[in-house]
Image (cartoon, rainbow, N blue to C red; front, side, top):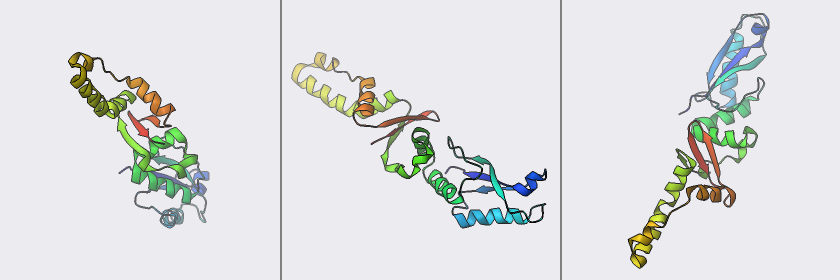
Length: 179
């Protein structure tokens, strides 16, 4: 599970020169009301009388996503829920597509994660290559089987250009998403 936390700052205290706020764990506080409840508690404990304004001043676990100070709590809760549920898979997808298209995310489109694009191509074509080599051995002998090679770079290019697959390099791994 990915830790997803946001620091909500008390703006009345901030403007008065005092740091006052609360870190909220969005894997625990998963809905709007619970998040607002934590913000309300923080504002009630403000060193400044009548504090009611807040802003996002820091966050962790959002990968490439840059949160706005005044992002809506509903959108924040929905994004955090996806990150908690899908971890680096959704963060890799966002790094390729943009958080603006988060509604298009579908975890079932993840084909797999690999060390490299060529690693995917090898894994994807291994069974096919072996069956073609076996047919060549039966028909023409071992020498013919030795001639059969898969162009892994071409396999990746076909997946990208012809099939519309995405290969996303994120956090040291390649995430492969189908169309």
